[in-house]
Image (cartoon, rainbow, N blue to C red; front, side):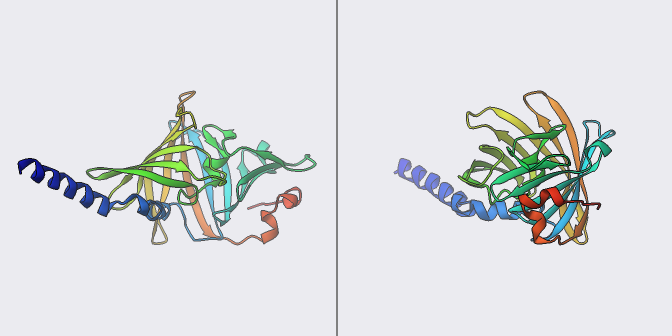
Length: 244
């Protein structure tokens, strides 16, 4: 009888926890996490600035134009030698173009830009479109989500371990893995700021675990901005001349 009682208690605990954080609600949880990364559902811009690990020396600034989660155009604002360079995320594909080229070239979402950020780190702004949640661990005030990349999504990393605040769903840390379980990057989410009454991620640290290179990223200058639909076309990249 005592053994049966213990089994019932364990079963109740498992059912209770799974009832709060069922794995089939993983997409819903990721969507809540994404709310801190999306200024608007579509048609907005923000500036992505990467600094050295002490946060003092600016490496570059890119303006990110978000048409929607599947179409994102990135344009260098600094340094001056990179002006006229563009990155385009179009559904599952990434393209690069700079003045003097005949046509854009396709690149990997893991292609490094400068510092520690890749093209996917910059242009991929949501988790829920790219990953499924395979398990959820409740560590008191934190939830640890194991993520696997969805097929045919143009994901940057095959696997991720995402730690979030269990009360407000703010991302705390992301560990990014290759298909063979090599830890490639760790991202520490450091600061959230209210921008026009919406709380958004505005500062995080990227650690390249292969080189131990570290950098700090600031996100700012969020604004509603709608570019012509033709701008989000790889064949139009050679005509781009964005100034702001």
